[in-house]
Structures are given as structure tokens and as C-alpha cells.
Image (tube, rainbow, N blue to C red; front, top):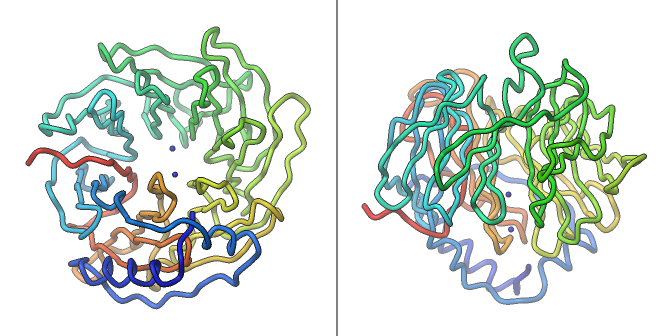
Length: 371
């Protein structure tokens, strides 16, 4: 589920991107105070922004719809119906397929990323969040994430070669429910954050057994592994913190307060900065200095009345595409996508979603569909 640039190149890139976006709203922004780790992120290699030649795929959970944006201009390329309760999305570049959880229908909708042909896979109950394995051969789907009266603690796996589905138990607590999956780099483990059950577990993929568990983590939402596999970062939505956990049994989390309802987690390529979405109002991102284990600051990404949702980072770590919505949708209150330049902690463009409802799941692809 992703450093640095000269200040002149960064400013030039911001100007180009903002001027090309057809949905730039000119929202006021605030930049976190610089830290030593942030300075290290911002000084180093030049930037050619090739990652902006791709596309950004956004699902709207109220409309049951997918909109594909051009990553550089923000122009919508295509809109597709993808099923009621469309919640999250991931793409297996190897399988040339997008996978979208249609929560209300107990299905995962598939979209061919080249032709945009749509199909469905029965998965349930209530498929919620979705992530691909590193080799793109397996899709991990969490189930009944916010519904304790439905299902059991499980995730589903989808084989991308034949769309077969299998189920794996994620917790010894029968009342827990899986929420955020994260497959390890070597494919041997899937880490699962449980929003209901306040628990993080590690599942051995060859055997399906639970390797270890860390609890309590109040409303554990998402989890991400460091490059060398030593630590995990977990968002704790219930207490407004992110937690760094050394992988293994008897782990003691290190907690860092970041703001209201943290969820999505993204590490820059150097891993000096952790970017976190905040689900409170207004929509915002938090930046964590992973060297000093401290909050660098927060950045509002949209105006008053907005709430934060999910986000994705480009592989080079230069940009985050973060969705946001309004509690009350109207012709003037439409959700959208904030484009954040990570090295300078700045909102450089805002794309208004072309329709009402709540944009939520988001994924970045290095490619564009053939339309």
C-alpha cells in the first residue's frame, strides 16, 4: 500500500500541477513546522514527476460509482457503476485488474484496467477494505468491519488468476472484526487491524495460523510494515494516536498522538515520514517524524464542514491523493480529492468529485486505461 527535491524544483512542480488542475479550488493551507527529519526528506534528489503520468481511481460509496482521474490534470477520464456501497479499491498491476468492495451487495467488483470491462465476485459478509499481495496474485478483503452482529473475525482471499475465494480466521476473539489488511513484503504474513476487538494480529499465510497478537489498540484501523520488516505502524482511531510496534511477541507499542480519528498510513521511501489521514473535521493529514517519534504537524486539506477519508501515496513519495467529503452534500458541497505535495507539506490542487455523495476509497496506478 511510496525523497526529496531542491526548493526551486519543488516550487516549479507545484506551480505546474496547480495550474493544470481543472478543479483547483485555492483552499487555504497551513504547513507543519519543519523538523530535522522533514528537512532530510526535502533535500536530495531532483524530481521529474513521472508518477503524475498515471491515474487516480476513486470510489464513491453513496453513488456506488468509480471515477478515474488523470493524475496530472485531475480531469475525469471515465465513470463506471461498481455496485452499491462501493467502499475501497486496490489494483493488481500484474493482473491488470481493479478490485472494489461493494459492501452492500456482498461482492467485490472487478474492473479491467485496460478495457474497463466490469465483473463481480461474491465475497462476504460486508467486504470492507482491500489490499493486493506484492506479487499481485492475491487480494485480501476484510469483512463485517463495523458490524459486530454479523460474521466472524475473518478475511477473504481472492486468487487473481481464477477469482476463487477462501476465508482465513484473523483473531481468537470471536467478537473481533477485521478492518485493515497489510500483506508483508515477503508474502509470508498478513497483518490485520481489528476496529472491533481493538487488536492487531499477524497471520501466517502458508498455514493460516495466528503468529502473534497485540492488544489493546483502541479501534485499530490500518497497519503498515517498515521496509526491513522490523516494525509495524498502526493507526488507533479510538484514541487519536499512531503506534509503532516491534514485530514479535510481547510487543510494547510506542504511541504518538496525531489528531482526530487517524486511519490511512503511508511511509515515504526513506521512511523518515509517516503520513496519516485524519477522519475528523475539517479533513486533514498528519505528518509523523519517524526518527524522533513525534508529530511534525497537521495540514488541513479541505475547508470547513469537510471530513477526512482515505489516501494513497505515489511510489516516489512526492504526492498524496487524499479523499474528503461533506457531512451534508449539496451542489456547493461536493467531496473530492486533495493533492498534497509531501516534501513541502502543501495542498497543490483540489479535484471536485463530479457528483454528489462521499468519495472514499482511492488508489494510484502508474497506467491509464485505454479509452
